[in-house]
Image 1: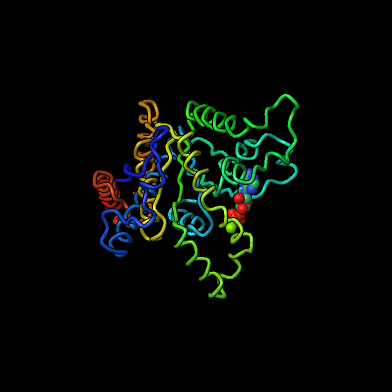
Image 2 (image 1 turned 135 degrees about the horizontal axis):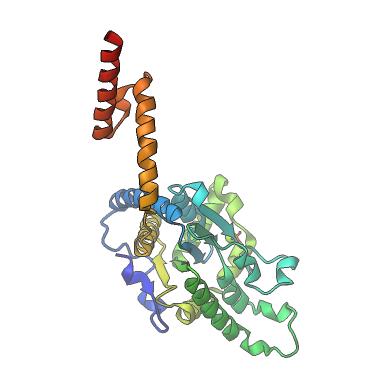
Length: 318
Ligand code: AMP
Ligand code: MG
């Protein structure tokens, strides 16, 4: 269902063909919210399996213009995940320590273990978005041999290679662009100013960045096209209707986890035989205590316990 928003190769993403106000198959918010609830339950089940299986990790990274709804969407998704199997990292303006390293260093530090889900609020893509729009790399230190004019192209290449390397090492990267329209952004900024509780979300720099709207759209288009692969796809998610955006993100996560297809770890024959012995021992223990029979769900075990208890009472009567 999320496939129409999935970009897997160069040239597939043209901004003008993707309507930020799209609401797909849904007639209204209610329908989407009901579908979303179902997805959150499914994600929770799949996460448990992924964790138990422990063979593959996955990153869901979020990029967007200001006020597209990144934080709220991430909060909604996290609400269904078990904390032991998920990490969240947000990437801000790099610190001096971060700038003293290669730009992927701080990102690599936040990668998930196999069996884990990592949520990235911004990512290495900032270096080909804000970094490209404002040519931030011109203020950084570079070895003399580096051609500054090629830095953005080098980065696309680095990102493609690095994400492929991770894929070959059992970590997937799924990249989600929350695509809000310029008009909707203005409305959301206004409500941040008019509603006191939202004031903290607004910064003067948000208005300044808005002036570079077209440059950012072009940077997104380039970044998506240069780095989308079938293994590490981009999804361009319409973000003008939050209820649709949130459902679609939940659907992307369900689709990805289902494709990963985690399995409950299998118990080998030797362990099974051993478990059988423990089971017998436990039946003995449970049968002798005052544990209520209804607590034991398995019918066979239930029968065995009754059997033991009957024998015991007969013995006692004798
Ligand atoms: P926020 O997510 O609203 O707290 O803002 C974080 C800010 O950090 C945004 O303005 C990002 O563009 C900025 N940022 C994140 N990563 C980088 C980066 N690699 N280079 C420059 N700015 C960045
Ligand atoms: Mg912000």
